[in-house]
Figure (cartoon, rainbow, N blue to C red):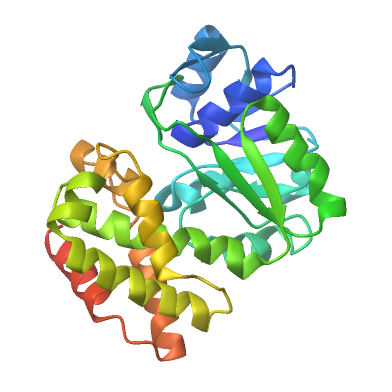
Length: 289
């Protein structure tokens, strides 16, 4: 199997799969590929343990594989896909674990609808250096959208490697269940440079407002999302957790603002759903650079 983008998420999953005995090929830039070939993937995790996993690494896919995970940041997706020629990938399942929802259409245009498996991952994991992964959340949860007969073995593969994976029949439900949580948390934590604990106590009215807006958009897109349940999930998160967007802002990296906030606003506009709080937060983040 191949993993395009062995960063915080991809590096963790590649390491877990390699530790479980699978042959894993990581696709990355030359410097990262060299580091992985030399030192492997080094994971520090209170949930999965501290370990080093040996993987193969290259700058492009040069042979067929039976599975490919796409785990790059949305901001790097277009350039990264040049490492994954459609003619080499063929009909292998292509599982994107990216933030947002718009990437599915882009991948289907490039690789066809058949191989693309709508999926999400819930995890806090960061690449601190090439091949070095810090996993901070007490979970790794993957949802795959599609038929159980096709995706059940894939879910079992992830589960056996140490992630909690399940198959859900509803694509809109899978994708919007994550975005309806992620967009409010990412926008608020990044706008106010605050942890999720600080946001849910100091900015609770705004949090509730954006959650309700995101849930309304999700429902308009065909997904059943209960804002009260999403708020309950927010309240259950460790107080010190940060969104990936906030970590990117703190590190001076390009934000996935368009993939997360932009996707929410575009879907809202298309379906005539008012989202004034989310729109203000996106505008303020755009203005801040």
